[in-house]
Length: 181
Image (cartoon, rainbow, N blue to C red):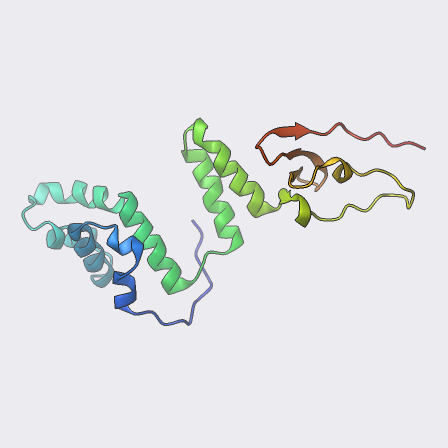
């Protein structure tokens, strides 16, 4: 993951963090662990010592890994990161989606690829598509003329419309247009 360079000047309070959904989703031990980790210089083992005082010394390392990989802890730290450093840039979001595509099982890749298409501008809503200028000023039909209202135009890496997705979720591939002279 890349380093976030944007900063946010908006102050936030600890009370606001404690009232947030990501914080409230944590168990009491996870809250103690997160708070200790934030205040002790990011020492995972020390955070386990505070959150789980009865844990044996040899189990603290695996416990620290388990806690920091828990989905609620990850969500809280993502929320905290946005509060302290600002929202991730478009490039960072794209990098995160690409990393997720590599890590998720095949059945989960479609939603991640759709998000990637939206972030990169490959798939644009029909009413917000980029205008395609015809090569000549004649009344030549463009591929976007054949896309029904409410559908999402699907563009390739060059911005050429290759198909669309209907409102019902069906994918339709457009035939390629032959140049007539």
